[in-house]
Structure formats: C-alpha cells, structure tokens
Amino acid sequence: MPNPIPLGVFGFPAGHILSPVLHNKAAEELGLDYHYLAYEVHPDYLEEAVRGARAMGFRGLTITIPHKVAVVKFMDELSEDARLMGAVNTIIFEEDGRLIGHNTDGIGWLRFLEETTGEHPREKKCLVLGAGGAARAIAVKIAQCGAAHLEIRNRTYEKAMELAHFVEKSVPSSKVKGGGLDDLYSAADGCEIIVNTTSLGMWGNAERMATPPIPEDAIPNGCICSDAVYIPPDTEFLKAARRAGAQIVHGTGWLVYQAAAAWKMWTGVDMPTDIVMEVLHEALELRLGIEG
Ligand code: NAP
Image (cartoon, rainbow, N blue to C red; front, side, top):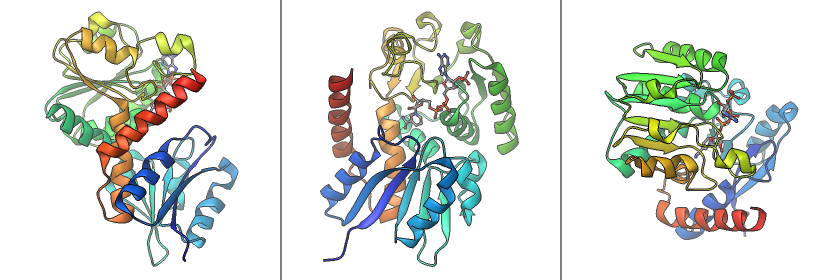
C-alpha cells in the first residue's frame, strides 16, 4: 500500500503546534489519504527543509513562526495576499516542481468574521492592537477590504509606525495611522471592529493571561471584537468585550479557517470546519487541563 501523501508544518519551536490535529481530523473525516506532521526546522536550514519536502513528495506545507517572511525568497510564485503581506503561511508544491507561496491568515480571519457576524470591514472604522506577524496579515486584509479608517496601536511605537507605512505601501488606496498603547480611548472611539493581535490574554503566563489589551470601558457598545489569541478560547479581551455589549469573534475560528483555506488549496475539498472546531476545542481543553 502506498504511503499517505505528506503534508506538514515548519516552525521553530514546533512542539506546541496544533495544526496536525486539525488537518489529520479533516483527512480522517473525509477518508482522504493525507498525513500531516509538525517539524521543528531551525532558521539556518529553512531552504534545505523546503526543498527536501519537495523532493519527498509533499503536497503542501504550513509555515509558521519564525519562518513566514524568510520563506518568501524560496518561492517561485506568490499569491496576491502573500505578495501584499510579504509573508507566506502556506506552500503548494505543484506537479511541475514549482513552489507557490500563499497567505491564508487574512482570508481565514475575514471568512470567519463574515460567517460569525455577517459584517465586513468595508467602510468601517477599524483598530488593530499589535504590530507583529498576525497584525501584518490582518491590517493588510482590512486595508484591502476598503476600511474607512485603520489605526494600528502597539506597545513598541516604532513597530506600529513601520507596519502602518508597510500597509499603506502594499495597499496604496489605504490611509493607516500608527501609534503606541497610550490613550486607547480615543483610538477606540466610534470603532466598529477591534482586532487584538498582541499576545496579551494568552495562556502560559498568569500575568499575560489576565491582562486585556484594551480597557473594558474603551470598547464601544455594538463593536465587533476579534481576538487572535485562541488559548484559552475565551480570553479576557473577549470577556470584557461581551460585558461591553460587543460582538465576539474567537481566535479558534480564525485558526480553523486559515487552516481550511490551505486544506482546500492542497486537496481541492472543503474542510469539515464544524468537526475540526470540535477537535480543536478538545485539544485546547486537554492542554489547559494538563499544563494550566
Ligand atoms: P509576534 O509577531 O511575536 O507579535 C506579538 C505582538 O504582541 C507584538 O505586537 C508585541 O508588541 C505584542 N505584545 C507582546 N507582549 C506584550 C505585552 N506584554 N503588552 C503589550 N503588547 C505585547 O506574534 P504574532 O505571530 O503576531 O502572534 C500574536 C498572537 O496571535 C499570538 O497569541 C498567536 O498565537 C496569535 N495568532 C493567532 C492566529 C490564529 O489563527 N488565531 C494566527 C496568528 C497568530 P511589541 O512589538 O511591542 O513586542
């Protein structure tokens, strides 16, 4: 019997990565012969690892921290999102040997937002908290969607300004404001979408987990609040947003939907997202229970 078609994720470190749980569940449910593993790839060996995966017949790879920007230069072609974001989180190995770099972080976030709220960033006032890798994908996607106003606030002021300039250059029709984490009241005033892409709220450090990225009374009633953090699924930010009368969009949905977009590109088949979401929640509960 032939081996299953290999898929995988390259990260450094890789022990904590949950995407094998999602993709292997999808393969099992759909009865497809794919097998997905996590690989710890040192940054010095990224190119060799990608070319090795091609040589070994991989159909696709997920690329995660810290390789998303570094891997771009090894691609033969980039999708529009990957080009605008300057980052790749999904590789397709074509039959003719070409490597196509995609980025599903923005589209996964957008699809889950639309499905959960029925809303779209077009003509909306949007605030992105954070200026790291997740912020880059979301800020570009929001700008592409034609937001009326986009502001990026980050602990390190310079990184917020850098990202604001990067987005304006990638999406020339956009006007993006950058700033620090001071006076988030004025930044959030009248906001219709707030996205947390900082790691505040994330499990693993008690103080970080208990700290919301924005004061509760700065969150406008009726605003949409979306969190990148998915462990725990219900973060301090989302709890505060709920109390403030906002609509909640969980980071778990974003994680599953960016994986679903990659899965569809590799296999041509829709991922059963409801079932995959269930298995993700089970895996998160186990991790929080064992290590929390
Ligand atoms: P990253 O590139 O390392 O960026 C981390 C961001 O968090 C930076 O803006 C950093 O600010 C900020 N930050 C860290 N500690 C902080 C603190 N104590 N106070 C205020 N700001 C702080 O990481 P990333 O790749 O963007 O990921 C960020 C989060 O999003 C992680 O929790 C990750 O798991 C999650 N994520 C989720 C998905 C999903 O599918 N749901 C996708 C991508 C990422 P400085 O610039 O000042 O350091």
